[in-house]
Amino acid sequence: MRAPIQNFRDSAAAPLDAQTRDRYLSSALMEEAIYSSLYEGAVSTREIAKDMLREQRAPINPYERMIVNNHKAMLCLRELARQPLTVDAVLNLHAILVDGTLKHPDQAGRIQNPADERIVVWDQTSHSAVHTPPAAVELPERLERLVAFANGDDIEGDRYTHPVLRSILLHFQLAFDHPFADGNGRTARALFYWSMLRHGYWLAEFISISRLIYQRPDHYRRAFLFVESDPQDATYFVCQQLELIRGAIDELHGYVDRKRRELDTMRSLVRRRDDLNNRQLVLLDHALRHPDAVYTHESHANSHRISIMAARNDLQSLVATKLLSQGKRGKKFVYRPVPKLEAKLKL
Image (cartoon, rainbow, N blue to C red; front, side, top):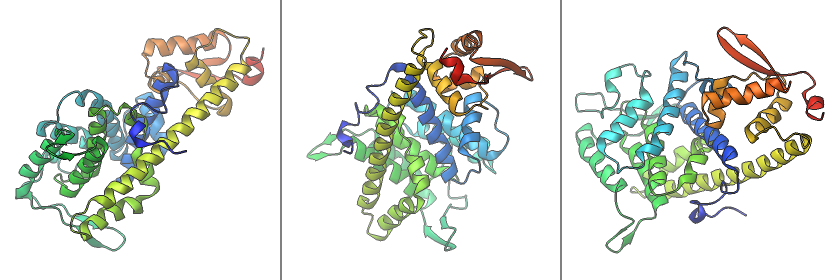
């Protein structure tokens, strides 16, 4: 049965232990950063991008820089959501998202002005303009109104605006206005997450709407086009986004069930050992399925949202119990699964 969105504040992740929640949160933030960038044209693979974020490797091209920026922005949103939205906060968020990726760096963190060549949304397939945003002279006022709407009360007079609806409309309106030279879609999706967190939907951090957008890009684009062609009726976009959110919740429930089964299987495999914590069990489960995997202090720390010292202790303990081998790659310590790992786990 599909999870009702009204229960989104406290569903799915609640039954997980804290270590598993932290691991999934870390993974979900990476997923959103990666797929939001891939949708906007970044060229990379999910695996390479995740390894880069886990190991905190410096990006080597603008595409990787876009992914790093998206991840940094996602990490900032929890703190940003503690305060009402401001115009400066939107501009700063945009500056984070496009840092080091623009042809003209001075365009980071500022809306277009009448002297700029106004951005137009272009369909690469039909080679035609599909959306001409409002004139640049209107943008300051429109952004002020967007911020006021973001900070509005759920009940104003006799009108009630559900927080999820408000979050979706923020996403739509920023994308519709297209106030920046680049990075409008990424900023719009970041504002959706800000609004969800601001209204107490903490579970929003655990889902990636961009992954589902990336998988079905035509549905996303068509929702915008339907609004454009039907006197600004945003119902099309709202329905499409609600379907995405439901899909993301379903994925989360599937992940929770799968992880619970995997941990139960791993615990039964090492039931004679009581010296392994959940993080180590997760790593060993991964190592059994990926015998050529390489782990570092940074990758383990970022996967589980723990300190480098705690990550080092986890890995060194697995070396001491002869479940991982330790080596060096340059100046960095690396860890690999030992041969015949499954047999050694059963000892």
